[in-house]
Length: 135
Image 1 (spheres, rainbow, N blue to C red):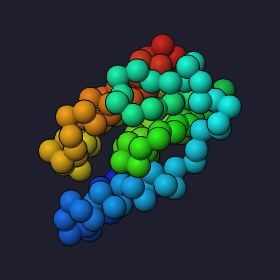
Image 2: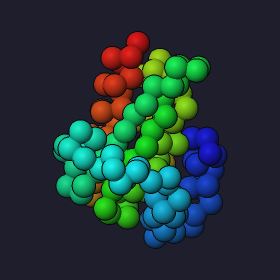
Image 3: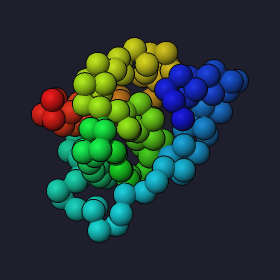
Image 4: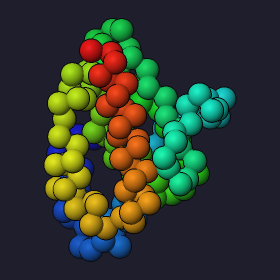
């Protein structure tokens, strides 16, 4: 799924209750991070829920593949959003993608708790920092 298609899908939801259900569905369909990788090495700090994130730079094409897991349904959905935004992109594309503008288009920060917003920011910061290091 592309970021543009996700915006269209979000717009089809009649209210935020439906959007939350869609977000949870996205999280349920998220390819899970292997249990063996759910270690301190991949655990993200700054999230209230447990979140693990693995970023793999694939040398064929120079794109990042992202794998993640969380123990919380909404957080898994938020992770799915970031994976839709960043997975399969080059480090330069990741750094240049206007994630804040995209989240505004989804009206995300107005409808998630400050704690979840902080966790989402931590996930995005980790992905962008790793991409910058690869440039």
